[in-house]
Length: 422
Image (cartoon, rainbow, N blue to C red):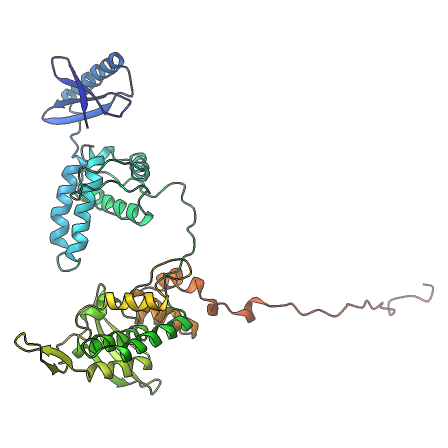
């Protein structure tokens, strides 16, 4: 981006204007600190006069000891990344930490980097939202991919993630006493969002899905049969336990135990779950037992010394329940069954099996608090994303109430108090 610059007061003050901007800016260095401000003037002569007055005012404040040297946003962001990576080690995934660094480098630092931390106000944050939502054709020079901006604005969740990163940086400034208070970062003009539900399989669609995986497993060639049978049991296991895909990936056979439930007398699985919420526990439905027994008794073909001939090895306690990745195979089955997209054109993934578990438990009348505990989530999340669109959560008997018709009142005249003359 080209910049046109002029210097006044013996080169102490720079008056400049960037390309595609209307107003002239002014900048000066006092006591080793760089200060910048917009003149709000498009005329160079007027801008120079305002810049001169601005500089003399800064010099007066500096001599009086009233000039506060704020940290810039770039300096606070550097401190945030240094602290965040150390403090959250082992609690946040490296990809999550890297996401903050990428959002800062690509979007936040180019916009806020040179600003003093106290200059980041609610209005400035709103300017950032408008800037990000405005379509641009030129490539982002701060992105390593050097790809052009998309024609459509970024998704609401993308902007939300960037504001989360911005809030973390501002909180870092507050902890170090570089900022007095956090500005209002909530989006203005926000209306109540639509009630949306996450893609899931209705009972009929779920039946169609596991019938498709069963037929695929029966008709698969011998060399692909193990994977086909695995994906069939994966669908049944996930839809009857409600595990997240990452939790299923971390699951080992020593974490799963087949037990007789004391309350119901049914055979179920007790699972020790390790995922994004740490260590938790899950009790499956009886429908997960038979698929897991097949997983235990299914020997995996293992190549010996790179030869074409293979040997079979049964799962050991420290082996993963679902070794490898079945994403491509699962998506292929969804495409062939016509189940990849739901009614609202949302793509279904392995996560949709967890959503299906929660929805079907609600449809069966299970207690929402117990579902939240079993799925290691909150009641609020279930009410927001699941219960709002499940028709079985509505009680027609309580809704279609009719007040009984009351009998007509008949007035009776009391004659005991009347005289004969009356």
